[in-house]
Amino acid sequence: MQRRPFLATLGATAAAFTTGARAQEVPGKKLGWALVGLGSLSTNQIAPALAKTKHCKLAAIVTGTPAKAETWKKQHGLQDSHVYNYETFDRIAENPDVDVIYVVLPNSMHEEFTIRGAKAGKHVFCEKPMGNSADECRRMIAAMKAAGKQLGIGYRCQFEPHHRECMRFTREKVFGPLKFIEAGFGFQIGDPTQWRLRKEPAGGGALMDVGIYALQTCRYLTGEEPVEIVAQEIKTDPVKFAEVDETVSWSMKFPSGVLASVMTTYGFNGTNFFTATCQNGRFGMDPAYNYDGLKGWTSRPNVKLAFPAVDHFQAEMDAFAEAILNDKPFAPSGEEGLKDLLAIEAIYRSIREGKAVKVGAV
Image (cartoon, rainbow, N blue to C red; front, side):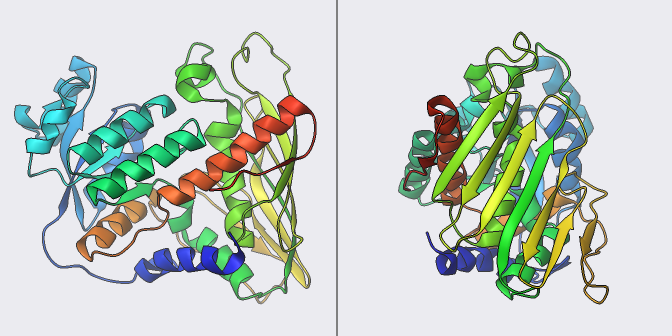
Protein backbone atom coordinates (compact mmCIF):
# COMPACT_ATOMS: atom_id res chain seq x y z
CA MET A 1 0.00 0.00 0.00
CA GLN A 2 1.52 3.28 -1.09
CA ARG A 3 1.29 6.72 0.43
CA ARG A 4 -1.69 8.13 -1.45
CA PRO A 5 -4.28 5.42 -0.57
CA PHE A 6 -3.05 5.31 3.03
CA LEU A 7 -3.55 9.08 3.37
CA ALA A 8 -6.97 8.77 1.79
CA THR A 9 -7.81 6.40 4.64
CA LEU A 10 -6.61 8.94 7.17
CA GLY A 11 -8.78 11.47 5.38
CA ALA A 12 -11.83 9.45 6.37
CA THR A 13 -11.10 10.15 10.01
CA ALA A 14 -10.26 13.76 9.21
CA ALA A 15 -13.72 14.13 7.72
CA ALA A 16 -15.19 13.28 11.11
CA PHE A 17 -12.80 15.38 13.15
CA THR A 18 -10.95 18.64 12.98
CA THR A 19 -7.82 18.94 15.11
CA GLY A 20 -9.08 18.72 18.66
CA ALA A 21 -12.67 19.68 17.86
CA ARG A 22 -15.94 18.17 16.65
CA ALA A 23 -16.47 18.60 12.93
CA GLN A 24 -20.09 17.51 12.60
CA GLU A 25 -23.24 17.09 14.64
CA VAL A 26 -25.45 14.11 13.87
CA PRO A 27 -29.10 14.37 14.93
CA GLY A 28 -31.13 11.40 16.10
CA LYS A 29 -30.80 8.67 18.65
CA LYS A 30 -27.71 7.66 20.55
CA LEU A 31 -26.32 4.30 19.54
CA GLY A 32 -26.39 1.63 22.22
CA TRP A 33 -23.04 0.02 23.00
CA ALA A 34 -22.49 -3.34 24.69
CA LEU A 35 -19.17 -3.70 26.49
CA VAL A 36 -17.80 -7.24 26.20
CA GLY A 37 -15.30 -7.66 29.04
CA LEU A 38 -15.38 -5.55 32.20
CA GLY A 39 -11.71 -5.32 33.13
CA SER A 40 -9.71 -2.27 34.10
CA LEU A 41 -9.93 -0.59 30.69
CA SER A 42 -13.72 -0.85 30.53
CA THR A 43 -14.11 0.22 34.14
CA ASN A 44 -11.70 3.12 34.31
CA GLN A 45 -11.60 4.46 30.75
CA ILE A 46 -14.35 3.26 28.44
CA ALA A 47 -17.43 3.47 30.67
CA PRO A 48 -16.60 7.02 31.87
CA ALA A 49 -15.91 8.03 28.27
CA LEU A 50 -19.22 6.57 27.09
CA ALA A 51 -21.01 8.78 29.60
CA LYS A 52 -19.46 11.85 27.94
CA THR A 53 -20.15 10.93 24.31
CA LYS A 54 -22.67 12.75 22.13
CA HIS A 55 -23.77 9.81 20.03
CA CYS A 56 -23.34 6.74 22.26
CA LYS A 57 -24.74 5.20 25.42
CA LEU A 58 -24.05 2.11 27.48
CA ALA A 59 -26.84 -0.34 26.61
CA ALA A 60 -25.55 -3.72 27.78
CA ILE A 61 -22.65 -5.59 29.36
CA VAL A 62 -21.10 -9.02 28.83
CA THR A 63 -19.01 -10.58 31.57
CA GLY A 64 -18.09 -13.97 32.95
CA THR A 65 -18.01 -12.65 36.52
CA PRO A 66 -21.44 -12.44 38.24
CA ALA A 67 -20.16 -10.06 40.93
CA LYS A 68 -19.04 -7.59 38.27
CA ALA A 69 -22.42 -7.86 36.57
CA GLU A 70 -24.19 -6.91 39.80
CA THR A 71 -21.90 -3.95 40.41
CA TRP A 72 -22.29 -2.62 36.88
CA LYS A 73 -26.08 -3.08 36.94
CA LYS A 74 -26.33 -0.89 40.01
CA GLN A 75 -23.83 1.72 38.85
CA HIS A 76 -25.24 2.11 35.36
CA GLY A 77 -28.92 1.32 35.84
CA LEU A 78 -28.94 -1.71 33.58
CA GLN A 79 -31.84 -4.15 33.42
CA ASP A 80 -31.28 -7.87 33.88
CA SER A 81 -32.26 -8.38 30.24
CA HIS A 82 -29.27 -6.25 29.19
CA VAL A 83 -26.70 -8.31 31.08
CA TYR A 84 -25.09 -11.28 29.33
CA ASN A 85 -22.33 -13.77 29.99
CA TYR A 86 -20.09 -15.38 27.39
CA GLU A 87 -22.44 -18.32 26.92
CA THR A 88 -25.62 -16.21 26.51
CA PHE A 89 -23.91 -13.55 24.41
CA ASP A 90 -25.60 -14.59 21.14
CA ARG A 91 -28.99 -13.58 22.53
CA ILE A 92 -27.81 -10.01 22.07
CA ALA A 93 -29.08 -10.37 18.50
CA GLU A 94 -32.60 -10.09 19.95
CA ASN A 95 -31.83 -6.82 21.77
CA PRO A 96 -32.79 -3.80 19.62
CA ASP A 97 -31.18 -1.44 22.14
CA VAL A 98 -27.70 -2.70 21.21
CA ASP A 99 -26.20 -1.29 18.01
CA VAL A 100 -22.48 -1.75 18.67
CA ILE A 101 -20.44 -4.51 20.31
CA TYR A 102 -17.21 -3.21 21.90
CA VAL A 103 -14.78 -6.12 22.34
CA VAL A 104 -12.53 -5.44 25.36
CA LEU A 105 -11.23 -8.96 25.99
CA PRO A 106 -7.85 -10.70 25.96
CA ASN A 107 -6.45 -10.68 22.43
CA SER A 108 -7.16 -14.35 21.72
CA MET A 109 -10.90 -13.74 22.20
CA HIS A 110 -11.20 -10.84 19.75
CA GLU A 111 -11.86 -13.02 16.71
CA GLU A 112 -14.55 -15.14 18.37
CA PHE A 113 -16.58 -12.24 19.70
CA THR A 114 -16.19 -10.11 16.61
CA ILE A 115 -17.55 -12.93 14.47
CA ARG A 116 -20.32 -13.66 16.96
CA GLY A 117 -21.13 -9.94 16.97
CA ALA A 118 -21.34 -9.97 13.18
CA LYS A 119 -23.67 -12.99 13.26
CA ALA A 120 -25.81 -11.11 15.80
CA GLY A 121 -26.17 -8.31 13.24
CA LYS A 122 -24.29 -5.71 15.24
CA HIS A 123 -21.50 -3.29 14.37
CA VAL A 124 -18.24 -4.15 16.17
CA PHE A 125 -15.57 -1.95 17.69
CA CYS A 126 -12.53 -4.01 18.76
CA GLU A 127 -9.59 -3.10 20.96
CA LYS A 128 -6.08 -3.34 19.56
CA PRO A 129 -4.29 -5.51 18.71
CA MET A 130 -7.08 -6.66 16.44
CA GLY A 131 -6.11 -10.32 16.83
CA ASN A 132 -3.23 -12.65 17.52
CA SER A 133 -2.50 -13.26 13.83
CA ALA A 134 -3.11 -11.78 10.41
CA ASP A 135 -5.32 -14.74 9.54
CA GLU A 136 -7.56 -13.99 12.52
CA CYS A 137 -7.86 -10.40 11.28
CA ARG A 138 -8.79 -11.58 7.79
CA ARG A 139 -11.56 -13.79 9.17
CA MET A 140 -12.91 -10.92 11.28
CA ILE A 141 -12.97 -8.60 8.27
CA ALA A 142 -14.72 -11.20 6.14
CA ALA A 143 -17.40 -11.87 8.79
CA MET A 144 -18.19 -8.18 9.20
CA LYS A 145 -18.38 -7.63 5.44
CA ALA A 146 -20.71 -10.60 5.10
CA ALA A 147 -22.93 -9.09 7.81
CA GLY A 148 -22.88 -5.68 6.14
CA LYS A 149 -21.75 -4.03 9.37
CA GLN A 150 -18.93 -1.66 10.32
CA LEU A 151 -15.74 -2.91 12.00
CA GLY A 152 -13.60 -0.35 13.82
CA ILE A 153 -10.32 -0.87 15.69
CA GLY A 154 -9.49 1.07 18.85
CA TYR A 155 -6.49 3.11 17.72
CA ARG A 156 -7.30 5.99 20.04
CA CYS A 157 -4.23 8.06 19.18
CA GLN A 158 -5.59 8.64 15.67
CA PHE A 159 -8.24 10.83 17.31
CA GLU A 160 -5.90 12.71 19.66
CA PRO A 161 -5.09 16.28 18.46
CA HIS A 162 -1.29 16.16 18.91
CA HIS A 163 -1.08 12.97 16.87
CA ARG A 164 -3.45 14.34 14.24
CA GLU A 165 -1.32 17.46 13.88
CA CYS A 166 1.74 15.28 13.38
CA MET A 167 -0.11 13.52 10.58
CA ARG A 168 -0.69 16.93 9.02
CA PHE A 169 2.97 17.88 9.38
CA THR A 170 4.04 14.92 7.24
CA ARG A 171 1.13 15.07 4.79
CA GLU A 172 1.77 18.75 4.06
CA LYS A 173 5.58 18.52 4.40
CA VAL A 174 5.61 21.34 6.94
CA PHE A 175 9.23 20.44 7.78
CA GLY A 176 10.03 19.09 4.33
CA PRO A 177 10.06 15.41 3.35
CA LEU A 178 10.16 12.89 6.19
CA LYS A 179 13.48 11.06 6.46
CA PHE A 180 13.80 9.15 9.75
CA ILE A 181 11.65 8.11 12.74
CA GLU A 182 12.59 7.00 16.22
CA ALA A 183 9.84 5.66 18.46
CA GLY A 184 9.40 3.63 21.61
CA PHE A 185 6.82 2.67 24.19
CA GLY A 186 7.24 0.39 27.17
CA PHE A 187 6.93 -0.01 30.92
CA GLN A 188 7.90 -2.34 33.73
CA ILE A 189 5.09 -4.84 33.95
CA GLY A 190 4.03 -6.06 37.37
CA ASP A 191 1.96 -9.11 38.35
CA PRO A 192 3.73 -12.14 36.81
CA THR A 193 0.49 -14.16 36.78
CA GLN A 194 -1.51 -11.80 34.53
CA TRP A 195 -2.83 -12.91 31.14
CA ARG A 196 -0.58 -10.46 29.26
CA LEU A 197 2.41 -12.65 30.13
CA ARG A 198 0.82 -15.80 28.72
CA LYS A 199 1.29 -16.64 25.05
CA GLU A 200 -2.13 -18.17 24.40
CA PRO A 201 -4.37 -15.23 25.40
CA ALA A 202 -1.92 -12.42 24.60
CA GLY A 203 -0.30 -13.64 21.40
CA GLY A 204 2.94 -11.94 22.44
CA GLY A 205 4.34 -9.58 25.03
CA ALA A 206 5.34 -5.94 24.95
CA LEU A 207 5.20 -5.77 21.16
CA MET A 208 1.55 -6.79 20.96
CA ASP A 209 0.50 -4.68 23.94
CA VAL A 210 2.34 -1.35 23.70
CA GLY A 211 4.86 -1.69 20.89
CA ILE A 212 1.95 -1.53 18.48
CA TYR A 213 1.53 2.18 19.36
CA ALA A 214 5.04 2.98 18.17
CA LEU A 215 4.52 0.84 15.08
CA GLN A 216 1.30 2.72 14.33
CA THR A 217 3.13 6.04 14.61
CA CYS A 218 5.65 5.04 11.97
CA ARG A 219 2.93 3.86 9.63
CA TYR A 220 0.76 6.96 9.91
CA LEU A 221 3.68 9.40 9.72
CA THR A 222 5.05 7.85 6.55
CA GLY A 223 1.65 7.11 5.07
CA GLU A 224 3.18 3.87 3.84
CA GLU A 225 3.52 0.23 4.78
CA PRO A 226 6.97 -1.12 5.73
CA VAL A 227 8.52 -3.38 3.13
CA GLU A 228 11.41 -4.83 5.16
CA ILE A 229 12.00 -5.37 8.87
CA VAL A 230 14.96 -6.57 10.94
CA ALA A 231 14.43 -7.20 14.66
CA GLN A 232 16.02 -8.57 17.81
CA GLU A 233 14.79 -9.52 21.27
CA ILE A 234 16.39 -9.42 24.72
CA LYS A 235 15.15 -11.17 27.87
CA THR A 236 16.58 -10.23 31.25
CA ASP A 237 14.05 -12.37 33.15
CA PRO A 238 13.54 -15.65 31.26
CA VAL A 239 11.23 -16.97 33.98
CA LYS A 240 8.77 -14.07 34.02
CA PHE A 241 8.91 -13.75 30.23
CA ALA A 242 9.08 -17.45 29.45
CA GLU A 243 6.10 -17.29 27.09
CA VAL A 244 6.23 -13.74 25.67
CA ASP A 245 8.71 -11.11 24.58
CA GLU A 246 10.20 -8.69 27.12
CA THR A 247 12.20 -6.16 25.07
CA VAL A 248 12.17 -5.92 21.27
CA SER A 249 13.89 -3.46 18.95
CA TRP A 250 13.40 -3.34 15.22
CA SER A 251 14.19 -1.29 12.12
CA MET A 252 11.78 -0.73 9.26
CA LYS A 253 12.36 0.38 5.68
CA PHE A 254 9.53 2.13 3.81
CA PRO A 255 9.04 2.42 0.04
CA SER A 256 9.90 6.15 -0.01
CA GLY A 257 13.24 5.46 1.65
CA VAL A 258 12.21 6.51 5.17
CA LEU A 259 13.86 4.44 7.89
CA ALA A 260 12.44 3.85 11.36
CA SER A 261 14.14 2.64 14.54
CA VAL A 262 11.62 1.37 17.09
CA MET A 263 11.60 -0.41 20.46
CA THR A 264 9.23 -1.69 23.08
CA THR A 265 9.65 -3.30 26.49
CA TYR A 266 7.95 -4.81 29.51
CA GLY A 267 11.25 -4.61 31.38
CA PHE A 268 11.64 -0.95 32.40
CA ASN A 269 9.94 2.43 32.49
CA GLY A 270 10.87 5.64 30.73
CA THR A 271 10.28 5.09 27.01
CA ASN A 272 7.15 6.77 25.68
CA PHE A 273 8.06 8.96 22.70
CA PHE A 274 8.59 9.48 19.01
CA THR A 275 10.80 11.83 17.01
CA ALA A 276 10.33 12.54 13.31
CA THR A 277 13.32 13.97 11.45
CA CYS A 278 12.52 15.73 8.19
CA GLN A 279 14.59 17.51 5.56
CA ASN A 280 14.12 20.91 7.21
CA GLY A 281 13.37 20.22 10.86
CA ARG A 282 12.11 17.84 13.50
CA PHE A 283 9.05 17.27 15.67
CA GLY A 284 7.86 14.72 18.16
CA MET A 285 6.03 13.84 21.35
CA ASP A 286 7.19 12.85 24.84
CA PRO A 287 5.14 11.43 26.46
CA ALA A 288 3.35 10.27 23.33
CA TYR A 289 0.97 7.44 24.23
CA ASN A 290 -0.56 8.01 27.67
CA TYR A 291 -4.28 8.56 28.15
CA ASP A 292 -3.52 12.15 29.18
CA GLY A 293 -0.63 14.56 29.78
CA LEU A 294 0.73 14.27 26.24
CA LYS A 295 3.33 16.82 25.15
CA GLY A 296 4.52 17.74 21.69
CA TRP A 297 7.45 19.78 20.41
CA THR A 298 8.94 21.05 17.17
CA SER A 299 12.32 22.44 16.13
CA ARG A 300 10.71 25.69 14.99
CA PRO A 301 9.59 28.26 17.58
CA ASN A 302 6.84 29.48 15.24
CA VAL A 303 5.33 26.01 14.71
CA LYS A 304 3.53 24.82 17.83
CA LEU A 305 2.47 21.33 18.84
CA ALA A 306 0.29 21.95 21.90
CA PHE A 307 -3.41 21.22 22.33
CA PRO A 308 -5.90 20.85 25.19
CA ALA A 309 -6.42 17.34 26.47
CA VAL A 310 -9.24 15.25 25.04
CA ASP A 311 -10.70 11.91 26.11
CA HIS A 312 -9.32 9.57 23.44
CA PHE A 313 -12.02 6.95 24.03
CA GLN A 314 -14.84 9.47 23.84
CA ALA A 315 -13.44 10.82 20.58
CA GLU A 316 -13.06 7.45 18.86
CA MET A 317 -16.45 6.13 19.97
CA ASP A 318 -18.24 9.27 18.78
CA ALA A 319 -16.39 9.04 15.46
CA PHE A 320 -17.46 5.41 15.04
CA ALA A 321 -21.06 6.32 15.89
CA GLU A 322 -21.01 9.19 13.37
CA ALA A 323 -19.77 6.85 10.65
CA ILE A 324 -22.64 4.46 11.37
CA LEU A 325 -25.27 7.20 11.61
CA ASN A 326 -24.08 8.82 8.39
CA ASP A 327 -23.54 5.48 6.61
CA LYS A 328 -19.91 6.42 5.93
CA PRO A 329 -16.78 4.22 6.04
CA PHE A 330 -14.89 4.33 9.33
CA ALA A 331 -11.15 4.54 9.74
CA PRO A 332 -9.24 2.94 11.40
CA SER A 333 -11.03 -0.12 10.05
CA GLY A 334 -10.26 -3.80 10.23
CA GLU A 335 -7.85 -3.44 7.33
CA GLU A 336 -5.75 -1.10 9.48
CA GLY A 337 -5.59 -3.70 12.22
CA LEU A 338 -4.58 -6.35 9.71
CA LYS A 339 -1.66 -4.26 8.43
CA ASP A 340 -0.28 -3.87 11.96
CA LEU A 341 -0.44 -7.65 12.46
CA LEU A 342 1.39 -8.23 9.19
CA ALA A 343 4.22 -6.00 10.43
CA ILE A 344 4.19 -7.63 13.88
CA GLU A 345 4.40 -11.09 12.34
CA ALA A 346 7.39 -9.91 10.30
CA ILE A 347 9.07 -8.64 13.48
CA TYR A 348 8.64 -11.99 15.22
CA ARG A 349 9.76 -13.83 12.09
CA SER A 350 12.93 -11.71 11.89
CA ILE A 351 13.70 -12.53 15.54
CA ARG A 352 13.28 -16.27 14.90
CA GLU A 353 15.30 -16.29 11.67
CA GLY A 354 17.94 -13.77 12.72
CA LYS A 355 17.75 -11.78 9.49
CA ALA A 356 15.85 -9.07 7.63
CA VAL A 357 12.48 -10.21 6.30
CA LYS A 358 9.83 -8.90 3.93
CA VAL A 359 6.43 -7.88 5.28
CA GLY A 360 3.53 -10.05 4.16
CA ALA A 361 0.87 -8.79 1.78
CA VAL A 362 -2.68 -7.94 2.76
